[in-house]
Structure formats: C-alpha cells, structure tokens
Image 1: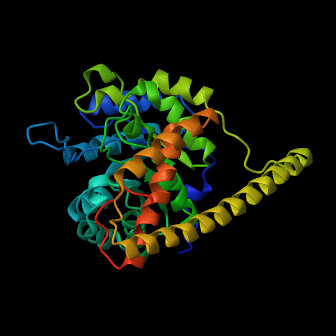
Image 2 (image 1 turned 30 degrees about the vertical axis):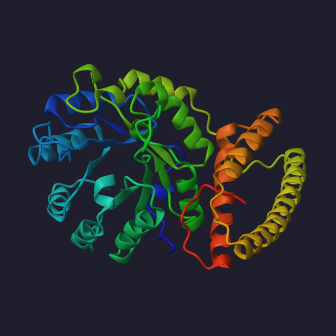
Length: 365
C-alpha cells in the first residue's frame, strides 16, 4: 500500500494535535483553542463530541451541538478541527459540518463492521482520517482498519498509537508496547504514526517521557489532551494538561536529526552495527544447536514414555538463568521473556516429535 502524500506527510515533525478530551461547552472549547494558538506547533484542535463510555450515565459528549462549537473554533482561530467518529452517521454529520480530521477510536477499530461502514461513508470525501490502534495488541486488526480506508479512496491517512489495554497492574493507563507501532512502521513505511501519550499515560506526569520516546522512535507527531482547567473536566481529568503545561513540554522536547550526515558518526555507528550483526548470527547458531539437543531429549522421553512436563527442571532453569542474568547486568524481566519464548518453542518441538498434543508450557527438557 503506497499512500498518496497529503497533509500528514507534508507537516514538519512534530505535528501537534491538542485539545480537550471532550467538548463540554462553547466557551470551554473556545478558551482552550485560543490559548493553544499561542503555541506555534499546534496545528489541529481536537475535541470529542460523541464519547463512547464504558458505563451508561457518564458524560457521553455534547453530541451534534458540539459541531457548531468546533466550527466556531475553526473560524476564530484558523486551527484545523478534529473529532472522533464511532459510526457512519457520525462521519456524515462531521463531514457536512466541515470537520477537517476524523479519528477512529480504539473501540471502533476493533470492529471491522463499523470500520467498513465509516470507510464507505467517507468515500469520495475530502477528509483526513486518523486510525487509533485497537484496545488489544492485534496489529493485523489495526492494519485491516487502515486498509479499509485506503480501499475507500482515502489517501490522507495517519495511524495513532494510544497504547493497549493492560491485563496486569501497570504504571500506565495503557501499555505502550512500542514494538507494535515499530512493526507498523516496517509494514507501512510511508504511513505517518502519531503518538497519543495522554491515553498511554493516564496521568500528566508521564506524558513528557512518553512523548520524548515517541519522538525518538521517529513518530510524526503527538496528540495530547489539553483543557483550559483540567481540574473540572467532565472526562479523563487526570490525563489532561493545562495549555501552559503543554507549552513547557514542547519547549523541552528534543527532536533528533534522522538525516545525520557527520562522517565520524556514520563510521562509528556502522562499526557497532556490524558487531551487532555478528552477535545476532551467533545467537541464531546457538538456538539451532539448542534445538538439535531438544530433539534428542524428545526422542529419549518418547522411548521411555516420559511426559514432556518436568516442572522441577523448568523451575531450576528459571532460577539459575535469571540469577546468572543479574550477574551480567541484565534485567530479570527481559531474560524471563526470552526464556519463555525459547521454552515455548521447545515444547512445540517436543510435542511434534512425540506426536502428542501440548499439555503444558512448564517444561524445557
């Protein structure tokens, strides 16, 4: 998929999209937008008017009347305006109201039926579309949503990385899982990716760190929630910044050069990369040797009619390898994930050789 270059491609990094989580009143959006015009980097004003909430009875947005408020923001500030659409009907109303940018929320991205309906509703329209990742870490679902808009003729597209639902306790509202937007960059090299640090963080004190990391990963921009007075916001008040706080963040943000041409740097980085390449091939060779040994273990177990599951052995591997990792200044959690991945393949291979269905993931020979 080769996207035709449009607005998102033409903007200098970082493109900054800012505004409140929800449009609560005409005065609120105008005051916030006016304050944001003092920040040259802000090009698009964002505000939700149809809010998909988890529970009924919560503030679900101003609805259709919010479109007029956004129109006034555009008229008085010159900022482009963006809002979330969750249905084809939302999309049609937003386009008729002159909304410049539509974004597809995480919940909607997870529903191919809704995505397809919205894509058909914007077909043939001059509109920019941003597609947030789904709630769960499914890159194919994310790519599928992007493809549906591309197939509908939308060429001014951007992806929004807003993090993924955490299944365990986390410092963040949503897990960044940076490897997923990196994979998206590999699959669609010409697709701009914008980071939404507000939804990843859940609290303003993490937003600066997440924003900087996004820039270091060469993301095209940031989508940050800003409210004239977050303390009284009707939705997500803990993750919304004051305009002054955004100003401070943008001044501290380091935008590194991706086209660095210093010859000494290039020579040194190339040498280091060659060393990494050499180590990577060594690792692959060692994994291949390990796999050959696993095949031998599987044959021994099969001959003696021994189960694959040997819990004591697996516990011993974890304890000794993790302790050894620490002596080499490696993170236990990092090495644990690596061991679990290697062990999962060992189980699969033993099961294949012994011709039995895997019954556990707690053994490694």
